[in-house]
Image (cartoon, rainbow, N blue to C red; front, side, top):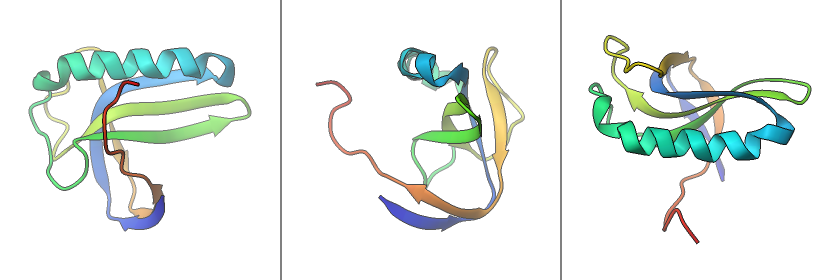
Length: 102
C-alpha cells in the first residue's frame, strides 16, 4: 500500500450500502455484478484500474462503498449503477496483482 495524490475523478459502478456485519457478503456480490456488466460501461478512463474500490463514507458500523470503474464522464450510467465524483486528495492505494480466486 502507498499514499498517492490524485486529482478529481469519476467512477461508475455498484453502490454497496451496508453495516459491517453484512459488508463481507455484499461486496463480493457487487463485484460479481460489476464484472458481468463491465462491457456496459462506455466511458472508461485509462490510467487507474480498470477496477477500483472506493470507500465513500462510514458512519459508525455503516459503510458506503463503490465497486467501480474510473470513467471520463457520467453521461451514460448503466441501469442499477451510480456515478460518483471523487475529489482530488491524498489516498491510500493498493494495486492487486494475481488471480481473484483462491
